Length: 158
Image (cartoon, rainbow, N blue to C red; front, side, top):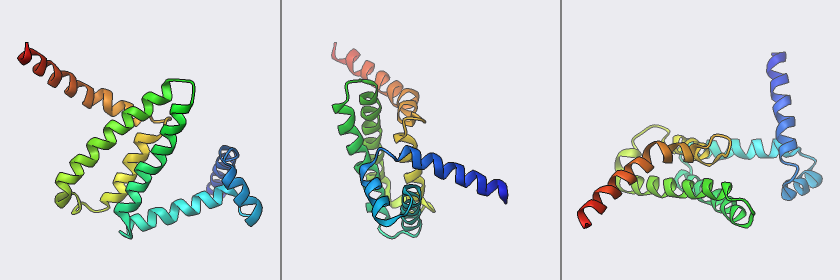
């Protein structure tokens, strides 16, 4: 039990340090005396519970998949480097494909238990720069399909 407590406290401290640059959370912490990590953790837990129980799940998952990504994409456009631009461009390509597939197969997908929970985890994996999920999916599957399809089109038009 002591190891679990130490693990949680260590990760709460790491999360608190990583959230120090978020002014809104700093203001929240000053006014409520609730640590930033607890606020983010509690909000995330409520978010996941709503999704797991289907309370506005479609809206919440799309808000998560679009909202944060749009915010981070604008930040990437304003930054001087190109690396983050590539991360978010590949994310948007995959996000668009996922939404298109979901639109045409929604009658099947909604029968999958915890579909929206799985989609949330997938979107988080795609978004996180530490996992580079969007890049892995793009390089492994989408780019080869595009290159092959593009080669067929180009050979028929010549």
